[in-house]
Image (cartoon, rainbow, N blue to C red; front, side, top):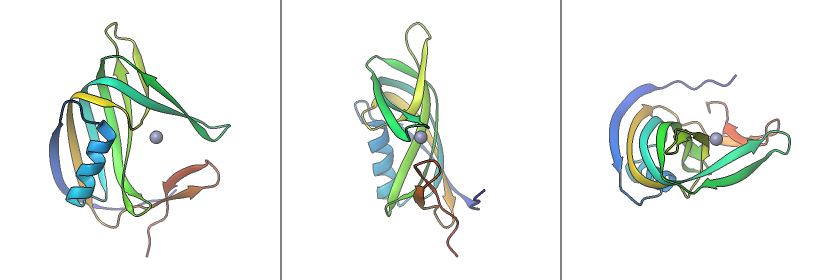
Length: 145
Ligand code: ZN
């Protein structure tokens, strides 16, 4: 297990603009405000959801889009560092008009209708993502000392 410790930083509520890209908007926010580590939650609605599923055997992502107006039932994520820049990692569950649920890793291409986000910034050395041979994923490396 790899462990990073932090002190609580500022907590911000963000209302994302209608028509914005969920991941891009949160990434731009992190870059502009210098947020390098955070935990985040979000809820609201999207006009479409671009999602990814990680195939653990093939060690590759399968991308798919739900082209419908959806409720964001629950979204969660974090911000850490990938290739020197803040990287937003988010997963979410969505529901259609019948209450049928979809979910996965939220990809660029998810268009916001209305979204309320809480960003809990964390003060301390930001975790840096590095390639993990076992999973094939870019995961948090050990704290740098
Ligand atoms: Zn993911």
